[in-house]
Length: 128
Image (cartoon, rainbow, N blue to C red; front, side):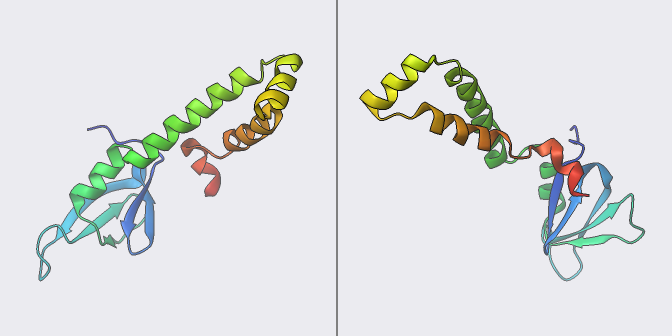
C-alpha cells in the first residue's frame, strides 16, 4: 500500500494530520471494543494522538482518495478542458450563441476560470 504524501487525514475529534507524518497506528481496545479509537503516532509529536476513528479507516484514507475528492478532481479537470475549448470560440460564434441561444460564452469563461483558480490538493503546503 502506497501512502500518498501531503494528504490531510481526518483523525476525528476535529483533528487532522498529514499522511506522510503518521508513523504508527495502534488500536485502543481497553473498555471500548475494536474499531472504535486509535492511538496515532506522528513523527513530529512525542506522545500519541488519540483518534476517534479505527486504524483501518485512517490507513485507508492515507493511501487512497475518498470518492468525493476523486469525483471533484475529475470534475475540475473536465471544467478546465471545457474552459480551454470555449476560449477558442471566435467572436462571431460567441455573438451568435448569445443572441440565438442565450448562451453567454464570456460569462462561462469567467465562471470556469473562478473554478480553475481554486487551490488543488497539492496546494495544502501553503496552509502551514
